[in-house]
Length: 334
Ligand code: SAM
Ligand code: SF4
Image (cartoon, rainbow, N blue to C red; front, side, top):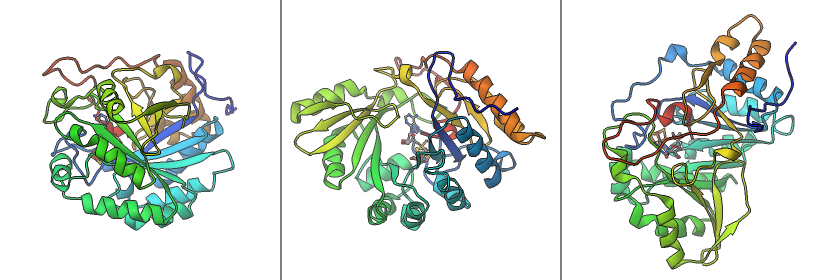
């Protein structure tokens, strides 16, 4: 019989949030995320639209209430809107929220479709407002498209949260300006510490910026009040009195937040990773392609609950160190 029991791991954490990568491909090449000549997953191994849908239904049956579609860049996948439409039908019927993390380059084209399918909020990753710096960082001159995408998202009624990876010597000096800009546009903004996931050309140590230091700088300029706002993600929030907006800080390196983890991640090829910073995995594609997909999927999810580790242990402490994991963030999404 297929279990309908909620997903609870061995540390009694209830897992209610799925981050589902729909592709590992991307139209940008952010230098902290992937190399210019990235090796992508073989297309034949990527789950079909029907398989992604079936997979998501299996998770919802086991108590997943929130799904974030991610990548790679989710909006480069051709049948993405169909998937959003199919999953949008589960909102209010098992699912509380369907969201998306995107680099924004194609939002102008898709914002209306996403809103019509029931998406209410999107996370848009944007690390700099300087066109030349964007081109250097993302290795593509796409800032104008991203800004158009943000405009389209606002017009479609989507709430936007900006995600910016804080990078020493790259956008460090610009962070207050970006926060003021985001709040002026009515967006929340969250800063993220760079994580040592996957080989890239550069040494992440050179650009690693601990957010505690950033917070102190911001506090010298503005009044930050800790907020009890929570979104089910790893960010801790602050209200800034002077800008009237909310700032999130995601500090995987300086302030571990694994204790409250409610998340599980699946790659576009159906590999479940029990932890962003670990290699514990379960093959859901094999379950999906078995004779009894929903029962096999449910058993695989029980196995995932048994191997989800208590916490990740990655650090960026010395120059030249190999990444903690060979897997890039573009496989499991953010
Ligand atoms: N392409 C989409 C985007 O950029 O929003 C979705 C996938 S991307 C992998 C998700 C998030 O992960 C982005 O906000 C990106 O900045 C972040 N990211 C990528 N590599 C990272 C790393 N090594 N450390 C910290 N964040 C990273
Ligand atoms: Fe692409 Fe997102 Fe990685 Fe940038 S961070 S290369 S946009 S997947």
